Image (tube, rainbow, N blue to C red; front, top):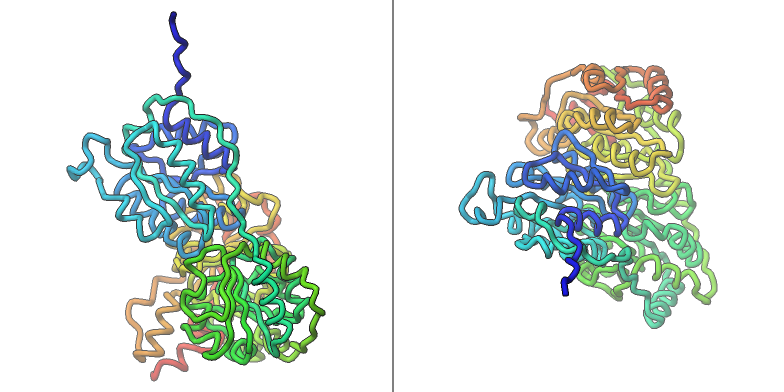
Length: 553
């Protein structure tokens, strides 16, 4: 009696079925010959989009930004050695920023592996230090299974990127149709009753308790507010996670970032109880591992046991989902407390205002504070800002108030070139939002070509460029530590508005406050992407220093 053959599909189609079933909607890539069938399968699937970028660096940043914004991983795909190398910056950003991401790396064909074939690199070893899991698949019928495992690893515990290297001959092979998989929901461990009661009693009895909240608490904003109000704690946001708590709330005391005003750190330094929720105690958040101050009792709640107690001694550490833990704490039956944080709050509010000297500024170009003032005057409060690395960002971190959730995308890894690609992905994932990239001239000339991607995919973003002709962060360090500069001056002023127009976007050049307000007002209403090239004074190198003060001559 003849048997009915089992239905088959290509390995690439099986992989895409797993991705779509997990709620993954986009793959960002520069197409490569070692994953032809994968790109084709994604492009043909009704629930997924293939976004072709101008550089793998842009693809990596886009996938990272979408995963950070939505909590659902996006796919980044690159080919063999050069493509995988270019993609690595975005993957490293996802690793340091705890962002879920699925990475597919095309590899040399199976029968050529290990022979230094064309563009061959040991991709598993290459990606191991910058991912949660890195593997090479050698059988086509295992690809769907490994992809499902990758989704589980990327989204469980502390989220992060997973890299799968696939020999180029596997994606096109016929394999049995895999079983349908329901969407994976990562476990959310609750806070134990014992730990809840200890934390609640501790916060109630403390004299000056504060909370340091990070990206792990982003999805629990309302619960975080309730806990802070119930126990009357001050709240700091960790490095580049300023939207985790409403900045206009009277209990918000500041941002633990680079160049934070020293006066805003006093409340944390003087605290006797610090609760860290959903945040690594990273070098920047701890201000060089100096805070919380020695002798302070510290408790930490994190979904990843490897992060609990990493970097500091704890009074109490517990593994729990931030949302579950905060909900439990907010329901505490202990009486609400009251502590007066108004003085510390006023210190932070004052630090967000431009100094009076800005009004007397007569240097070439706009003072960076004036750019932030123009943005505050023009942009909607719920604007989603993506920001790049660079000293210009210190003015943004100080001057912009993040009142609404999901309004900041910024790399804690400090990677240059993030803002423009991240804005493209943010607009695709949240098309109803006003999305603005804030970047320096160094960063925009690294990845600004992704404006063409924005034009092609219909993502009307606004890009605000602080153009001062310097790699400003390094120029400041050189001036401060060496008394001179080397290699930090870059050509300028460049016609960046013309560059944007050459890619099909709109462009405007401004050097006055009035011109900036007009350009921004038009940009956020435009149907296509716009770059606003703002000429800024290179002497004003940070909110607290000028190059002329730092350099002896």
